[in-house]
Length: 65
Image (cartoon, rainbow, N blue to C red):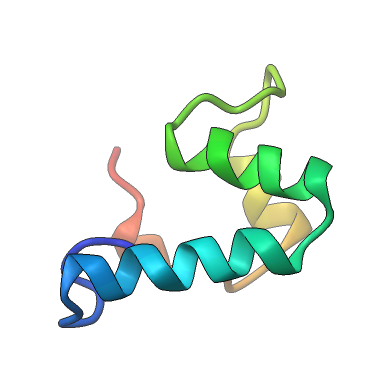
């Protein structure tokens, strides 16, 4: 759903996101929308936390110093 990741028209990307929101639980949909708006409801989560919890998810070259 990120611009530039796949060459999709914005309307198609929006429809796919809406379908995802309709497929998950309401609380999960709220969380996805918050993440999309870059407003995480959790304080203190760092890149290091993500790397420890999900090794290999974020390649080192994608992490900006």
